[in-house]
Image (cartoon, rainbow, N blue to C red):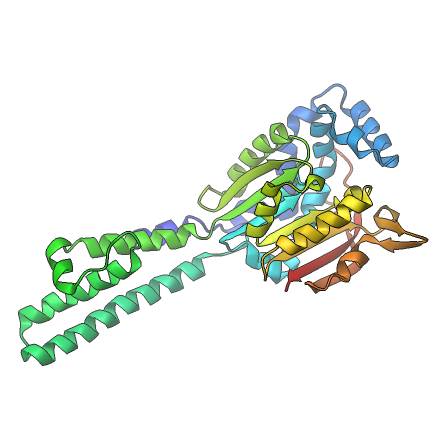
Amino acid sequence: MEEKKKASAIVNDPKKVFGRSPDQHILNVVKESCQEAFNLPSFNTTLQTIKSHFFDRNYDAVFQNPEHLPVYSARYAPSRALCYYHLFMEHPVLMKTLEGPSTILCIGSGAGSELVGISAAMVHANPAVKVKKAKKVATKTVKDEAEEMAKHDTKDTNGATDDTTATTTLGMETLTVSTESTQNPASPTTASETTPAPAAPETKTKTKKAKVNKHKVTIVMQDYVDWSPILRPMEAVVRSRMLLGPERLQCETEVGNVLDLSDGLLERVAKADLITFMFVLNELFQDKKRTMLLVAKIVAAMPSGAHMLVVDSAGSFSNLKVGERTYMVYMLLDHLKSLEIVYQDDATWYRCPPSLTYPLKLENMRHFVRIYKKL
């Protein structure tokens, strides 16, 4: 009964978390996280400066000024968080990642859109079914092994009651030894003499607890400037409003220029189940040579079976000129032999429902989507 309570603690009821509208709940989370930015007297002026730099594709001017970051997050995080939430909800291969255990490495995710959108989708992922199945299998294994050893011992002792009872206990202890990597293998006689009878139930409890913890999802938010003043309060609001405790969600940050191809970044890639490039790849391709090398290195470091999610503008911002020809960014990825295209859409819209409320106008987003699998 206690284990059922622990398992259910990591499962949320979406209706209780979101109420009538998941979309509005997501916007409320972003609004609460960015309230200090909205209170800035210079908010509107700073926002116009950011837009001007974007028009000139001067991304360093946008992000290397710490005063721009909270305003940028308040302006661009909400629509993208909604888009990412629905994107995950629409694709089972992405939702499967949210059941855990898994690690999601989000490149260029400092503004918090990935944190909010993916966390909201996690509310719908239900890992409790797996925990329950694992529990039944474990119980059946203990019972079957005990009965098997009891039958074997009965043949040798002509049905002596005391021996049968001892053999049943030994059957459970033998299973306990085999699942504990820190114990040395011992003969049944030694286990009976040195291990007290209550040890078996205690070990079973530890095993079940480990299975529950295995449903943790780790989101690594990588960016080339330090967004922690924005991400820390946003994470706190996400945990509170979406009921995601540390046993279910772990958040980490990684600061550094991905184009530097640090060993730490490639180690992160090698451990990731999903890598996302969402509205960042076309910015990186301002340096075509280094970004091509980055993509090649990341794909090479990805473990077999891992996935990559690429989302970016479906317009001219994603145009890439190579020689005399112009390509969309995704066309280069599509031709990589070690990546299998799981899903593709060259142009799709996410349109914000008109009933939603937010302090700023919400922007509809026309974007392309690619989901790749490493072969």
